[in-house]
Amino acid sequence: MKTFLLLCLLTIMASCQSASKKEVDVPSLPEVDVYADYPMKQMDIGELAEVVYLPLTKKLLFEGRSYYSTFTGYVSERYIVSHTFDGDVEVFDSSGKKLYEFNHQGRVEEGKYIGIQDLWLDEADGEVWIWDYDNTFKIYALEGTYKRMVKVSESMNVQEFKAWSADSLLCYDDYRVEEGLNKNPHPFYLLSKKDGGIRKLTSIRVSNRINNNERFILNLGGKRQIMRFALTTSSIQVGGGRAVLADYAQDTVFCMERGKVNPLFVRKPSVFASLPFVLTSVDFMTSRYLFFSFGEKSQGKERFERNLLFDFQTQEVCCYELKNTDFEPSLPVRVYIGKDDYPSDWLVNEMPVGKFLQYHKEGKLKGKAAEVAGKIKDTDTVVMIFYRFYKEE
Image 1 (cartoon, helix red, strand yellow):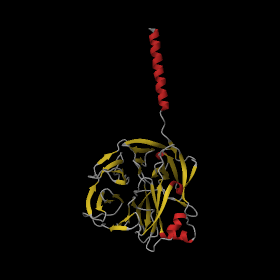
Image 2 (tube, rainbow, N blue to C red):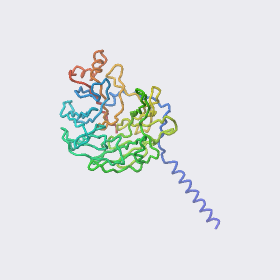
Image 3 (tube, one colour):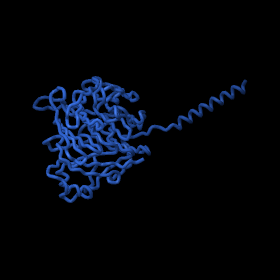
C-alpha cells in the first residue's frame, strides 16, 4: 500500500513538473517600453522602395490657404481620388490625367452629403464611397452619379475605416467622451458594404475608453468658447491580408489575420499610468515592418512623442529615421497614412509645387526628383511622391 501511494505521489509530482515546463516553453508576448532607449535605425527610402514623382493639377485640401495636408484620398495602380474640405471630389488616372470631378455637398437631401469626412474607391464596382457627417456612406459612380446610401447603426460611429474584403469594411468606433455617447466596449467591427450590418470583433474588449481629442477653452471677444483638436493618430492599418489594431485605451496591440485576432505586443507602462495619457498610434505598415508611435494627449511644444519600428519577422523594436536622399539635405519621409487608402506596401506624400521648384532652383534635387522638376507645368499644384516598398518574405 505504501509503495502504491509513493508511486502516485511521484506521478503527480512528475505531472506538475511537466506542466510547469510547458508553461515556461510558451513564448511570452513582446513588450515595448514607451520610454526605453532603443537603437536608432537610419533608413534610406531609395533602398527600401521604388520612388515615383508625379506632378498633379488638383485642388488643394484647404483652397486659398497657405498650408497643405500630405494627401487626403485614395490611391491605387489605376486611380488617384482626392477631395477638398469644400466637398470637391476629383478622380485622376495613374498618369495624373483628370477623368471626373463632382461636388454634391449641400443640404440634407437624397444624393447630397453634408461634408466629406473620408472617402474610398471601390474599384470592383466603380463606386466612390463618401463618409458623411450624418453617420452614413453616400455612394456615387466614378463620374458623380448618386447611386445609394448605406446607413450605420445609431449605436456606432465610424472614426476610421479601411477596405478589408470584397464584402466588408474594417472600422473603428468613435468615442465622444463629452457627450457620454458610444461607450461601446468592442470598438473594432466589420461593416457590411451591402446593408451596413455590423459584426463586432468581440475578442477585443475595452473597459474604459478614451479618445484622441483634447478640449480647451478660449476667450474670444469676451465670450468663452470650447475648442477641440484631434491628435494625428490612427487605430487601424491594413495590408497584405493583415490588420493591426490599437485602441487608445489599451496596452495591447492586436493583429488580425486569416479571420483570427491575436495579440502582437504589449506596451509598458500602461496608458493610464500617467497624465496626460500617452496614446499608441499605428501609422503605416509594410509586409516586414510596422511603423508606430507614442504621443501625449496634449498640445504644446513640450509634448512627448516618439516614432518606433516593429519587425514582424524578428519582433525587434527600434527607433528610426526614414529619409529621401533625392533632396539635399535629405528629406524626412512622413510615415503616416491616417484616413487615406493605398495599396499594400505603398506610402504617399505630397509637396506643394512652389516648394519643390525652390529645391530645384537652389540645386538641391537629384536623381528622379531633378528629372521631374523640368516637366512641371504652370497649372500643376502639387508633386505626389509615391513610395512603393519592395515586398520582403
